[in-house]
Amino acid sequence: MLARIANSLFWMARYLERSEHLARYAKVHQFSAIDAPEAQNKEDLLMSILKNAGMNYLYQKDIGNVNEMDVIYYVLLNLKNPYNIISSVSSARENARGARDSITTEVWEAINMYYHYINNIAQIPFDTDDTYEVTHHIFTHCAHIKGLIDNTLIHNDAWHLISMGLHLERATQICRIIITKTDDIANVPENELNESIQNYHWSTMLKCAESFDMCNRTYRATPSRSNALEFLLLNQKFPKSLTFNLDKAYNHMTKIAITKKSKDDFIFEMGKLVYTFKFLKIEEIDENIHVYLNATLDKMYEIAYRFEKSYLNY
Image: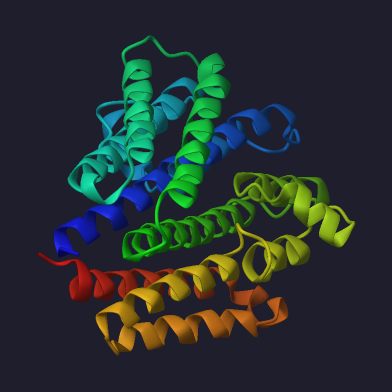
């Protein structure tokens, strides 16, 4: 496979997964603000959306005032923002077009439909009441595309590249969600930080990763710092946990490496990272969770960069 095609497949998957996570984080925080404890500042919840997406500084430069309408629109559809959902979907479609011969007609048509939906919506006046419908369509399009990727492609190098991109991006987004939510709790004044606010933030964190129900059924308890972090970081059987996605990304990476007959050291580093998490206990990192996850993000960025340099450069 040409490196150009491989690059397009890898990034097509990453942009698709990114668009879904941006949409879910925005939706969950907008609607959870309705039931937030009285001590929880709504502006802080809106800033959390921007921080998770890495858009807070850009938003302050472009818009300034933090209000619900501007924040949601900026993350979803504002054409001034080069990093929002409409940009991710456009990049996914462009990469899919570049790898058209390596994906099925069904996958291409589904991505193309997603692209036209999001661009058509961007031309219509937006109101915060539209968030539910728009994000629902985003989730539906993403689920449809990922289902077609698994069920219409031969599980060869192209599929491994796409799957690796999906799982690596999901692992990155899970890290970012946890970092942002632990920051949100740390920013609550100590005299206002009570159990209800903490439970609210841990529940919101789980909902942002579609993990709330499964965490409750696993622990049979109200979401708390220990069970929410343990579930989302270390559960080896849950498809949205960090450990699960690192393991899947590593498995796909090794399949590609076998095809290329390569013994790259970054594959060893990825394996070491995976098995570190598999044998980790939440008590070992709980006190320094922010530092640990930022270091993990840096490792993932470095591994992805070296993978691209070795396999995807053209």
